[in-house]
Figure 1 (cartoon, rainbow, N blue to C red):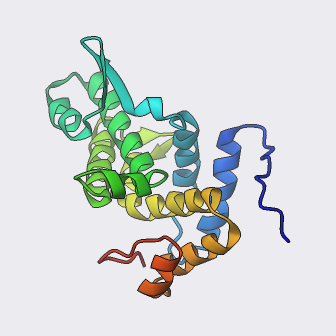
Figure 2: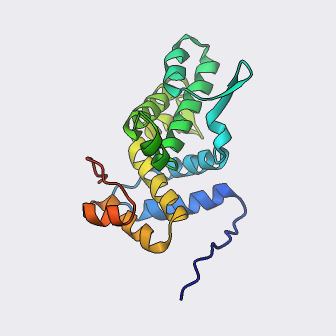
Length: 197
């Protein structure tokens, strides 16, 4: 009989844990994203690991952040406020499409493709405001163009963290497009019309 107890993860900090996991998955990917995007994403995962990051207080009431509205209203803000809002929307969309994609798919009217488009647009606009980040030209433009594969990597990391090894292997098979609908349903993965390549 195998022991199904959870193991304790011992790493110096969450950012290192996320970076190692994403880097490992990225190295095995057929279309790897730039290393800088992996580093940035691990920082976002560390910073937004708590669900409280997705809520705000308005008039004494807690509510979920409405990212689409924030993105639309940002054009009326100062350059510095635009930088903050575009980064906030891009980072939140990265988390929603990657680490919390199951929750988005189950509970929201809008699916992950909406948030992917929102996140890529936010990073693209941020690139216009901040054309250089971490001493890399067009850094946020690279994030915008890598948004979908990046969220796939984050989703695979989330799956590996949540599920046992057998289910993780099924998830990998699904991501490659090799799992049948019956296998996915049996493993608790719900097939969609589009499979990630």
